Structures are given as structure tokens and as C-alpha cells.
Length: 196
Image (cartoon, rainbow, N blue to C red; front, side, top):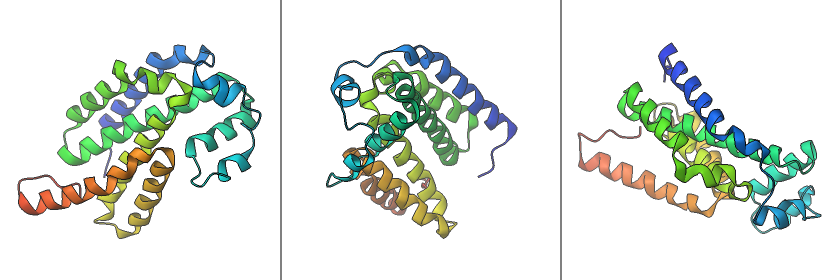
């Protein structure tokens, strides 16, 4: 996939609008589940607590890293959510562009996603970190899986991204079903634009 200057400008503009939309969340304090889960949690900076669970949690691993870098400064946790939201928005842009080859459609679709009010909770609330994280990994895994059809060396990367998505949220179990439906749809409908 070749990104032109126009595509890069679209991505730059998307990043700017996300930063403008969510910049004010950096000054937000912990609230709700954040208080017990992070600020009042004596084990929050201990990496062994992440791996002591039957299934390690990627969001909790990120929290351990954030605590070890910035202590319990809420801004560090908000930055994580914003970064993953930016990554998800860029992934949506790339996916739509791959499927349609229409850069304006990719721009407006991902722009709508970037600032839609329904996403203000997962991006602005620290305890909802799993949503932007799993969204980023599952969409990126889908893109890489699509590219692996012409470059098989990427297949393993797609699996790793899918596993990271599963470690972020159990909702990622839908990924194999998406792949199967795409394969079946491709065989049934020759006008369908396959993911690969």
C-alpha cells in the first residue's frame, strides 16, 4: 500500500482534530473505577500482578508501565487512551482506503470516528482503556491479515496483533468470524471487495 502526500496530510489532520478534541481530558483526575483500580491500588506498579492472572491483561500492563514512568499522574493514563484512539483512527483510514481506494471516503469515515461523541467515554475515562486498545489491535490485525494474502510473511504479525487484541478485551473473539465471513462472501459474490 502506497500512501501519497494527500493521504499523509489526511492522517496529520486527523491526529490534530483528535488532539484538539481530547486535549482537555489530560487534566482530568481519576474517577469511578480509576480510584480503586489505579490511585488506591498498592500493586498498580507491580508487573508480577499482571502475569499472576490466568490471562494477562494488556491494559493493566500499560498501566504498570505508566506508573513506573509517571507515578500515578492521571495525564499519563489519558495519553495512553488518546494514543490508542489515534492509532485506531489511522487504522480505520487505512482499512477504508485499502477496501475502496477512495481517500476522501477514508478521510471522512475515520474523521467521523475520530470525534464522534460516543467515543468520549472510552477515550476520556482511564478504566475504559481496553476499548481503544483492543480496537486498535483488531483493526490493525485485519489490515495486516489482508496484506498477508500477497505477502505471507505478515500472517504471523496479524496473529500477534489478534492476540494483543484478545489480551486487551475478550470482545476480540469476533475476529476469526470476520475473516470467515469475508472469505465466504468473496466466494459467493464476485463483485465483493475482499479484504485481501
